Amino acid sequence: MTFGDALRRHWQEAVLTLVLSLPWLTLLAFGIIWLWQAGHVLAWAFACAALGVLAWPLRHAVKRRADAEARNALGQLSQPSSGWNDIEREAWVAVLAIADSVTPLSFTATDAIRALVRRTVEAVAHHFHPNENDFWAQFNLPDALLLTERLCRDVRREALRHIPGARAIRLSHLLWMHRQSERYGLVARLGWRIGFGLWRVVRAALNPAQAVAQETKDLVMGQTSGILSHRLRAYATRLLVVETGRAAIDLYSGRLALSDEEVRSARACDMASAETVTAAPVRILLLGQVNAGKSSLLNALAREVRGAIGPVPTTAEVKEYMLNLEGRPVVVLVDTPGIGDRAGGAADLLRQAARADFIIWVVSATQPARDRDRTGLNEVRSDAKARLEQRPAPIILALTHIDQLRPAAEWNPPYDVTTPAGPKARSIRAAMNSVAGALDLPADAVVPVAMPAARESYNIDALWARIALDLDEAKLAQLDRIRVGQQKFRMRELMDQIASAGRLIVKGMTVGRPNSDRAPHFD
Image: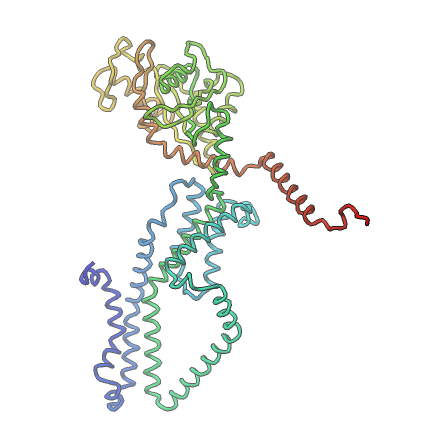
């Protein structure tokens, strides 16, 4: 940036600096001796005061611009994390509201800094636990220790980066400075105030005009330094609120990063029912009515026959299949019974949906009744919405049996459904729009597919491509599911902890046993 560009961007600061410096430039030009000899020192002091009053509107303009630039400078840090759910984003809005409303703090205002940090933490905690009296204390010891570890690591990095001689400063040096401050600090500050106050009194008695000029200069310069430091204080204050709020959201949501061992343990437990255990495959759940074509779609996605195919319901229970195809993401496909296939299906549906990272809702294009699909999908959505601590799994729709749409005798793929030209393409487009409207899904979430008997499956590659678009979202949902699962009470973990504590106590008692407990020795 050139000097001209900088001057155009910060002309208000430049004008303010010039206005507040003009009296001292005048003083340098004419000299304090000439002012004293001519008897204009008092008039000059009043001129300084007048210019200070004139600079008042400009001072406020500079403050407003400094606050706005602090918000822009922290624009990236002010963005919510991509993995946050609704309640975490609502808490983040409250944090930003505090950052926008707070007055920039002084670097020495420790009480005000502590109050601001506490206000930010309590605002976040109240969003997560609004019905608790001690809402700020709703976190466990491991999370608090993990947060402390992370903050200490971050503080160490910033100290090495910004504090000169950080490696050379020892704790003994800080303790010595602290002891000297406790021993002499109060006396030194009191002595300075008394001495400076006496000097001001003596100065006013010896030369009133010069004392007025000096007091006016000190007042104006103090205001100038305060205004010019406002930008840095605004940036630092907003940074404090933002970082405190982000750490508080991580703490109260339980979103602190799990250790590698915890993640491996949670994933192994989560994948216990799959054929093999690999590194965090996304769990894709196939849902839909009876005879919608779920098993046929599973076989098409797997490129082999894995599920039974027939005119009657064949998937009597939930089955999981690991897919590790070349050029495709590693996933677990979960085939489920059709909606309404058996009693208790709603509870099973919600239980499986709660364990899903990705949902493919399978709908037959030739099935006119959509009530069961609409009811089941609404139940899944409502259950996901009620679990505020988890990100909902993305949902797309596979529209099957499109080869049977009118004209039924025609089947000559591929078909352009974006700008349909022929009758078959128009029928497919109409079916896509109809099912998207009936199930309240965006049109781009509907993928038409066909698995005709004795023919090659159609548009499966497009379905894989659509899955790939939401794969990152599915992985975030998976991390949420693992995180929340780690927070649940597990009897086995409790028993392991009790056993470990017992062994530690017994070991301590054995090591600390006195010699008198040993077998006696007789001469």
